Length: 434
Image (cartoon, rainbow, N blue to C red; front, side, top):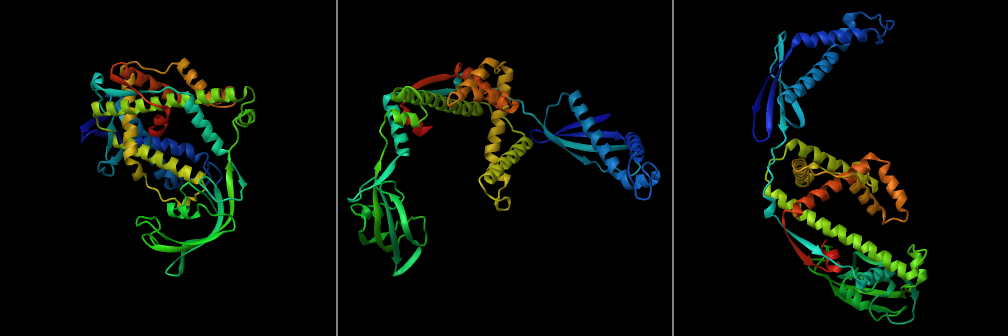
């Protein structure tokens, strides 16, 4: 077997393979012979069709299959012998083979994995957020939960911030009703910002059964281009005013939140525990982002284009699947994998870098760490044992957890060598920034 390797631009290589024609023809003949014993041909019993007919009908296909298999085997045998680490798949091209040639020559163009030399980790600077979950954080979360369960009761008074109104309205510009300028029984909660402030100001103070006419000038940058910068006259009739009623924070409220025993005290404890888990997750995410960015800057290397293309395609397929799951029809989805180029390039680069760093420094994901992470995930659910079992019954799910653990171990290894400074931060700020 004769092979030569050329170094092209960047990570690209070209391997020239010469294959004995006789070997291809001999194997093709054997397969055609075996095929002739079982194939059905009109006018003949199985296995009785003339060999020349079998050869005419199936010869090119069988020879193509044999050639493809031999090429693949010779290629991978060759790169293995020469210790070439192939990234992605090779592209085979005929090198101008003449009919009747003793040897067939092909060129395989492919990419190799980059040589990654890790930069100086000791020069990496990381800011680690330090957050303490306190009673005020729990109180804010409870207020959010109360607002999510708000109920409204009809009131006979002037509308104020927080009230829900139902109204009919019609808006005209130059005496003509504009598109979207008319609605019946339209609901709005004052202060939520769904309407322009001037519109909400006009509604504030109105009672059920009252009507009002007022002018409103749309902002120049209003999303509705047809009315942006124009002044409209609105006629509004308020049909009802409802005041918000939020539930009391008592044992009944705690029970509605899934707390069967322990009442409000247990609810506050559960919320505090959940906030601590969320704070930990967000802090770790921010640290990882800093570490990865610093590693990429400290360790420049070429990323195989073929791997980027594969990642682009995979990302596009996932996006299409998600859109279809949300109800979009396949024919309505106009998506090109080109939009994922930057993200795909980064994902592949990060994967290669972290993989090389882990291998070079014997960093692994231990089974007890994997189990601990699965159990931590499960704590957010009503029945943790079922969630743990769900993870362990599927190898792919567990593989994802293993990857997360490995990433955490890599980040911890870097943090042990990097320049780390702590920054106290409130939970509210963390939730806003992360």
